[in-house]
Length: 66
Image 1 (cartoon, helix red, strand yellow):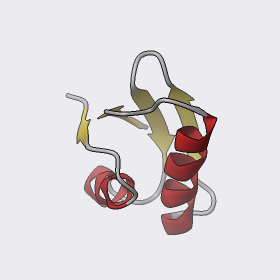
Image 2 (cartoon, one colour):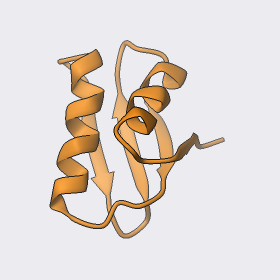
Image 3 (cartoon, helix red, strand yellow):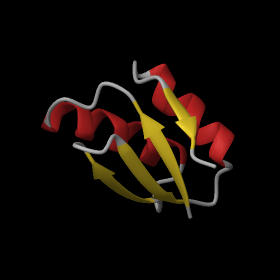
Image 4 (spheres, helix red, strand yellow):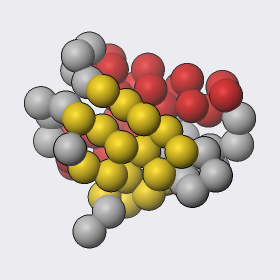
């Protein structure tokens, strides 16, 4: 599991876009979004870097949490 710090999660639609972007890469990924904290917890077989790129591709700047 890893955590992304994501900017701009303002509504349910944002959560849906992020979740769909991650699950398009790994349909078995577990995604938990904390809108108020700007944190997305991901359990996936894909690398954190690949997931980060997928989230940024749908318009949400993010960083992998250290």
